[in-house]
Image (cartoon, rainbow, N blue to C red; front, top):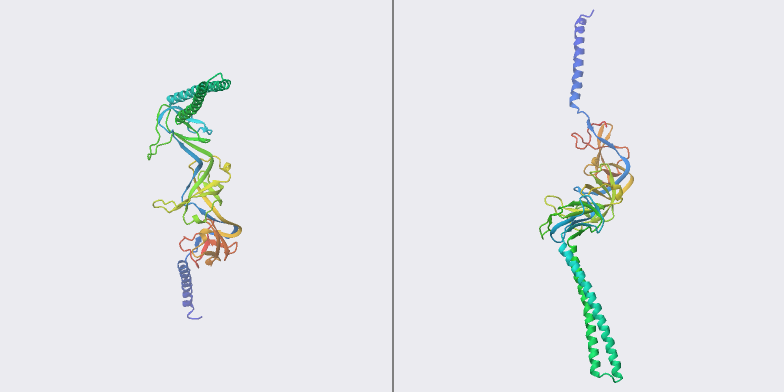
Length: 387
């Protein structure tokens, strides 16, 4: 028996324990020395539609094509208020009437004067005709030697005077008609009529109250606010740097906060010819976008907030990736075999949602969209976040 055997037997368990402890230490060191894979959000490159668009910088507003804030031309007491808020009216319909009995009486007086002038004209012209016949008769008698020349001159002069009186009476009729028109114009200033068909949005004042027109430089609420809600459009501000790319007639998409998830087709109908400078805000240009199919947007209210996205160009069936995955310099991070690898790509059309990929990536490649997560960089170990 080997004399060292008992000692060796005693050291074997100790040696095994030391090996186990060393292995655990190595594993622990590797666990703490090597970072955990970064959990990232990824999206696949796919084929689809990509658009180049321009969107408004601040919320736009739904506006009517026609809106009239009506007030009587002069002040007066409201005698008749024929509509209320929410009423639909036709063009030319009387909405409000001020007290105007004095002006109505003046119209009647002027009309009576026209009738009187016509009667005088009939009388004067009949007398002129009779005088002309008498002058002709005197001329005939003078030719036969029965009447002197003085008698003929007198008859002719009388006819001329009568004819002048007839012409004066005709002129007086014209003057009387002008007085009627003047009286009616004064009366019309007390009557408020709808200039077009629409809906009454607001009424200021009640029957019996006094309505006062707005003095120069001092705005006051209109007596009646009339809206033509049959024709609506969206006006929205666009950054001045995007304005040169816009043209009247370009297609657009309208989104309304009141109708989440829906989009309405439209087109650019007007671009403001000036830049609007608002204090502490970017300079913008107002763009008006009309609805292509207004009936689809039924139930809209004037004043709704809206967004308008003008489509500058579009391509279908092209490789695309989320725009948020594109880094500065047209680079992306691709997740391959558990590592993040940086790729240079060539981009085409782009908007806030998608960017076209012309070169550098094929459909199916997984690109990182959570670029702001700590530890996301080229060469880092990563795993895709479960959806």
